[in-house]
Image 1 (cartoon, rainbow, N blue to C red):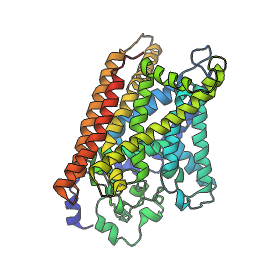
Image 2 (cartoon, rainbow, N blue to C red):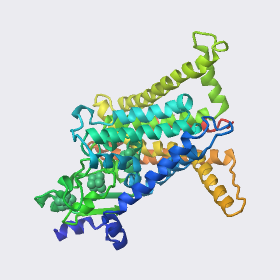
Image 3 (cartoon, protein in one colour):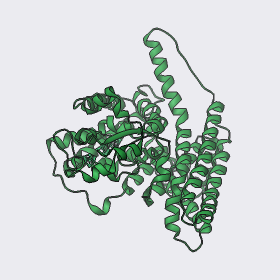
Image 4 (cartoon, rainbow, N blue to C red):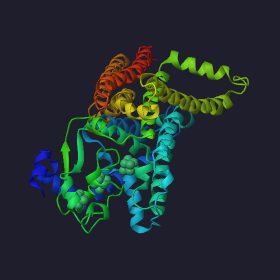
Length: 463
Ligand code: SF4
Ligand code: SF4
Ligand code: SF4
């Protein structure tokens, strides 16, 4: 390998840590982790299916909902800055697709026209829109189990039909969110030397060899400039005979600034997450919820008292999905308008897309704010049960006011980092001074609107 080329990188490589490197390269380590988590997933599904659908009734067992919605999901959100998509290394659902392929697969190419993230974006937004009324996953253990079964079945079917990890690359909504937020993460997997890749006749990371499989998501380390699609499976670490892969700590958020490739689907998701999770936090506040429910009731073309079941089961659900669709379009529209006003006569669509990446910190902070209460609830549940197991009574609680303060701090931090990201993205503009000012205005307008909405919602009294 070209010494000068490596020195130019001058980066710490976690793979230089002997123990870590051996673990990553071990053929049995990843399957063992996948298998253990798969068994745990089956246990969660079993408890979910055997619970009463409503946790308030006898027979309601919260194990499945607590494990998925109060622990796994918030923990992923809160650890993404440190570990990026490392969860995908361990994920049993992705592994189920792999196992299917090792038995049978038609190995078709995933259709060209669907090689984008729109299906994953729609699935993600639909799950959280439908959560409120339609499925109530967070309060309904059987529905949580069905959701897990649905994604496992989808991974199996896609593994049986398509080559590689098409499910992980294009469909998985969790992979989608992890991908976008991993642009902020403090680690990256890249090649050590682009020249070594360039000079390498046999691109083992692309075609695979006896030591490791071909990259399952079609990444090529020489061309990687962002974390989004790499599922940290470590196959390239195993297959690269030139020892040219590094896993390096870095400044969080580096991808937002460096990345040249930008996409409409990701830009839409970034705004969608901000507005949906602000809305969800609003629905936890009686005053806000009453406004929405009264509005939905007022436009019903039937008597909502007489047809109460129809109202609750269908009309409200239909409006939950409609409102989520409208507010996500509205949020993206706000940024589009802001870009249009700030860059008159320029390509608004391109400006909208590239500047939307500045909102990833705000998007993550709102996502974390919504998950703060759930994570604490999940951790308290574990602590209480651990205490019970050793004959102790360990009870914890936290006031809603404290959680509210934490949520406001998160929102404000996201706002500040979004302005900072907007500044750094704006600085890349070829028309330096003017471009920077225009970018700051465009990002500033939308960020301030989000901040006002967020503060307004978070200062309403919690029920
Ligand atoms: S993309 Fe989704 S299914 Fe695939 S490994 Fe990651 S979380 Fe699991
Ligand atoms: S096998 Fe290694 S050196 Fe060759 S192209 Fe892939 S990462 Fe680069
Ligand atoms: S093979 Fe390498 S680049 Fe491809 S997903 Fe796995 S870790 Fe990422």
